[in-house]
Length: 523
Image (cartoon, rainbow, N blue to C red; front, side, top):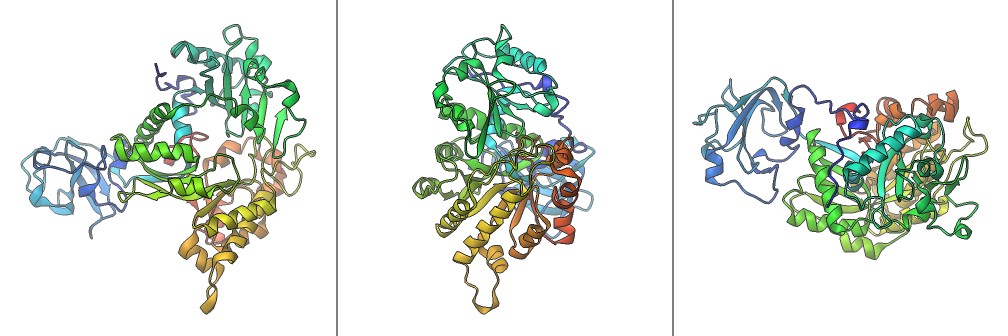
């Protein structure tokens, strides 16, 4: 029996469902740059029939903003029972904005049906999230919500409550209990396996809990016991095994030691995650997303579901992440590369990783951390390898997207993308690398969080797209200046305003769900 979606009652303060005025819940109904008469909310492959058109229901709001027709503003729309828009119109001015009035008999514009619902509020075109994680968000909805947990005891309490609410097999060797959202800065201490084992209800359970940024994982003693002590290295390139106050936390590349043992969900379970995630994302007005790192194995699940399941209602632009991170896997990538005619699934880009995350001192910095002078963070791959990978993927015809948070990681990411552009761009007739980047490559740096001023100018000059998650700034503000010091914080960190207004750079904005809430109006 599959566990039900998490009610999130423990994390309700962190994950509010803040709806935009009265109408955000249905904002996703009007899809940007897509004819309203052919967009289906429920099934992209269905077409309206005459019976659906006759029984179409009409809804009116204070205003409706569309992206089609010469008159962009309307106040009513009609929807057939199968989820299709049949028309969008302005009732007072009797102006049809989108649709075919001869084929639609819904209320208004000469139709015979009465208006079903009139509401205050405003409807806008559906929104895309520029950076999220679809399967991970779905898994989060079926796991332990640890966001906002302010003590280890609160974590234990939430895990106990979760285990009581799900199938008895959860927490076994074959079906680990999963969760996400803890932060040692909020807990007041670094957690350990012993802190879970000390609870009689959790003793002996297989539990794996990801940090808020998903760059560290905290495991129980039962999972530690699966790892032969002699196989635990003292140092992990690009990662760290936390040993104080005790074993149990693995960060960045060291997480592979644990995840290699994890009994991963099967395809049907992953479909459950995808279905749950899409349903929740629609509630906050999202109609599409850039899925920032999906393995070829999971992308095969995407391909099958997007073509055959009527619940696949979110447009997904997915970035391939090789089964082994930071390698060149063209055969695997080519086997899943696709672009559906209906736009519901596109796979033609890749995700590489330069470093870890700021909260766990994992983002790679040019100079040491201000609050931990012994480290500059972790490069998950060296600069020359990152450059080689970017060039290989670009030459193979893929858009390249590189995760980079620290200023050193961003510098290496820019170096790598510049080298890839120089490899493939024709600079005859006065063309520049920026011209080539804008016309045919559109390389991105995911997060672009801490960037040296010199490199901010290079991003502008090359036309590299910063993919930024605005709520990372507010989530990190409790410790960002401690990590970076006042000068780096002032000149390098969270440069959204500077990039847009001072450098005329156009970023892609997203949330990074489930690391942050998916509601676009919180960003």
